[in-house]
Length: 444
Ligand SMILES: *[C@@H]1O[C@H](CO)[C@@H](O)[C@H](O)[C@H]1NC(C)=O
Ligand SMILES: *[C@@H]1O[C@H](CO)[C@@H](O)[C@H](O)[C@H]1NC(C)=O
Ligand SMILES: *[C@@H]1O[C@H](CO)[C@@H](O)[C@H](O)[C@H]1NC(C)=O
Ligand SMILES: *[C@@H]1O[C@H](CO)[C@@H](O)[C@H](O)[C@H]1NC(C)=O
View 1 (spheres, rainbow, N blue to C red):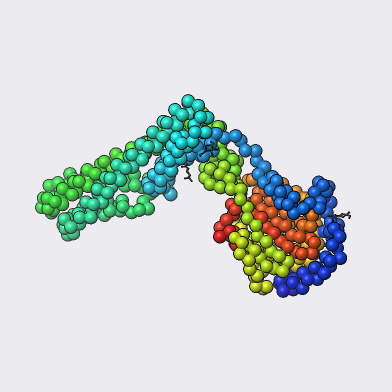
View 2: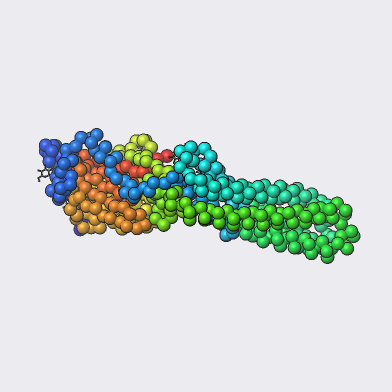
């Protein structure tokens, strides 16, 4: 097959030519019909525009059965509590607390304010949730104490240098103070903080004993008092950190038990990974958004391109791209499975073509009604079924005067008119907002 991609300027004259040809074919015939065998669609042929629109919305975008869930959000929040990190290379104490706070807010607002949900919870569930909430609250309480101690130490540190002379000859004192100061480094990891505080507490204890006899000669009374205060606060900091750690462990255990006992009632749908019942990984199928993937976004946007090349973006702005601009209409780079691209009109043997790349297939939708997949001409309608990681399919069919490609995996629909107008229209889930680029824009 010889594929020649030409610039739009050449396409324009072809478009005009095609327009002329189309005049003769006005009486309902469709030259794309010749390669299409579309028994399923016969009943729909000749549908009005409004029928087409309702057909579009009736399309089964989401073919996963949605299990009845009392509250996916609640299940998700408890699952997040189960996964609270006790340590880990990416975890700082403030982020641990932020997560805890958001889980606490989620659970309390769901179980407190949502009457619909509350009436559905049985006594055992309510009891278990109360225990969970109490523990989440304790983490936050321990953190409050921790912060107070922390701020206290920070205040002393600010003036300690003033009172402790630089050249007192005891390097250990300097190391100790430098290490204490390092605790205030914002990005310090939670597990390192834990280690550091314990280390500093022991260090401080050694200093206290080994230097007690010489403190008097090297430092003022004020400096001694400050060193002692830091050391004492370090002890209480250590206690709060131990408290937080054990509360986190208990919370995890309670959450785990809740999910074992009641979890089946609180599943989420829309998780990209079918084993991820609560969408904990935060990766939802297209058309679903949020941590808890049940928060469906059902909005779609439309981008269109007329035969003359004028583009109406998803956000509604209209422009005429430079004719030498061969940028695709839409590109999403999102890994092997979710990546897709929809080209601008290109020409193959003078026939306007839209090239749609999805997963491992490259679909050529040709304005003369022919469709090729990976270089092979196919009969319509056609369906390509995918099993993992999302079960779904890509279909191509001739509908009225257009070739229509739909992917319920990507939640997109591409139409190329076969009546000679060469109009292109792309409907896309708002899910892709800001994740795409190309002539159609990104919904912004
Ligand atoms: C498809 O072609 C058949 C005959 O080849 C014709 O009867 C039918 O009207 C055509 N359908 C459309 C939608 O043009
Ligand atoms: C309450 O929860 C139910 C399901 O558990 C949900 O459908 C509903 O939207 C929630 N109502 C409010 C006000 O959050
Ligand atoms: C629950 O948590 C999520 C993620 O942090 C947040 O987007 C959502 O608004 C919270 N819902 C409630 C009811 O607090
Ligand atoms: C449509 O155009 C392509 C590319 O030139 C060609 O391979 C195919 O045979 C044409 N189909 C029809 C029905 O003319």
